Image (cartoon, rainbow, N blue to C red; front, side, top):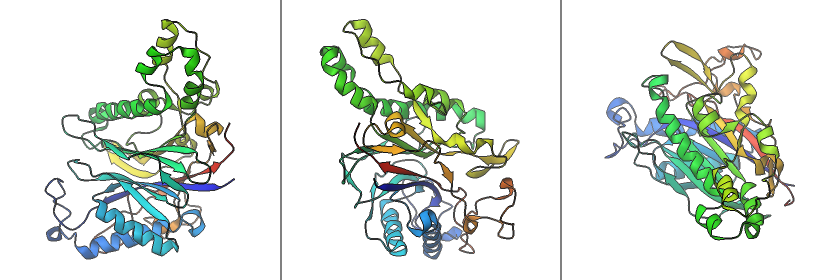
Length: 366
């Protein structure tokens, strides 16, 4: 059994100091104080934050968002390798034409994983192109187990929580369709072949390892996550195997309409007063929110396809280094512990989000 350390972090506006022809990043220019020195300080700070994870080893799989270019990602990954004393971290990235130029990316250990397909950035067209859904198929070198990772950054609440909710529901629906593409067989195949011949492949797809990492800009109980993505905190929806299908058209349609349930690990901190991944202040709300989430398929929860995740292993990684108020006592109330934003004038701070972490273990194939 091997352990794979996993994390997600919204890096908060990791832009370069060069104005972009695409991105509306006018505030991140040398004229406005976003200089190359500020970029270097920001990268150094983020690297130090990552170095606090997993007892200094750092993650083997790190989803990130709000990073502008592949060049910045390469620079960040190189700095991580140097700081962590590693040489195995590499990355997958797809440039997105998002209006702000902030992308989702995946950093992973090339010692543990190899590509199992072409990474794809999915854009959802609302009135404007929205932030991307980044899909990366990987394979564990040691065992051959597959893992499909989605890194996602959903539309913000800047227009108001309720006003912007339809945008997040739309992106959730697109992400759900992409998950279904891995967890179910395509319609054309189901309609064309005898179902008895497809049972083994149906079960294999239903139990694939799918992992969603992202800043969803909604809490786990919001309709976009709970209903549209069908990511719940209920193991009841996961535990039943796919029933053996009959061989009539009704059985085919029942299979095609069936929605694969996902398990959202991020409900864990919701019962802790003041806990959250970011401090949110919008409309009349001033509170910590659990926007940064880890969501898994049933295959990962039950270890059916060579990898297993503990559904209670979700952790908000909030070491003192990342706190806004360093004078707080170690046992300060959680609502007082807030992530420290990066300040380009002083070169201090990290991100306005805390990272989230979990671990995956390799297991025998079911």
